[in-house]
Length: 262
Image (cartoon, rainbow, N blue to C red; front, side, top):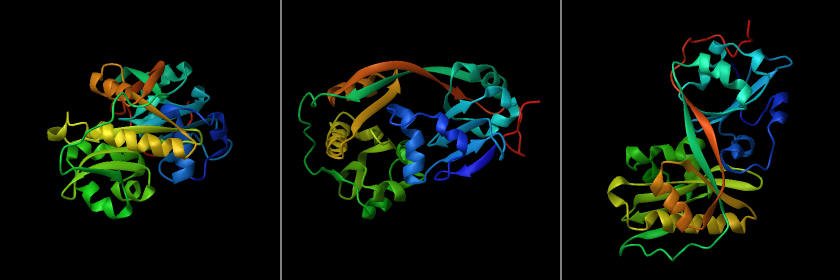
């Protein structure tokens, strides 16, 4: 794969539609924030393109332009791609797991106003919160993956968190920022669950999204019952079901780049 900066998309990037909900907002997130990376099969007149950010990848273009080893940079990513890419994806990784997903769109008020425990404050993140965000439980570190770290997320103004004595207990953020939709994510410290902290953070964040003239979306696994319940309680309703593919390690590495198929 040949990498390109997030804010300098190659010409085939036009194959991705804009204004899309859910993880498809990744395309606009890369352009708007500078986080993520574009990849093409070759520098001149590329025929296939990928965009990656926060462990997710989208593919477009001509799959016959790719050899399996060319897709090595997408190892360990959640990949969304048209069905025509499946043969080369299947050959590229030691395993390719199909994951059933659900896309929700925020269309209703929260079922009830969240009540957080005494001593907990829920508010919008600021740049000064970066150290506290960096000090969260390792189980929560994925939350700032699409921002390439806690500093950028804290400074973005696109996150809410629950605090107790300066410690972050839960955080909700815009994972992928699009021109029409913002796909949200939320994480709670394992020993702080079931206290409505996630709901309080998501409720504050969705109000911000609406005020920006956007609509909030939520994506999760079909089997993730707690996430589905949180989404419903916060006012999200199911829009569609889809699948993405979880890529394992690369079957054959290709350090020289995202090369063309033979």
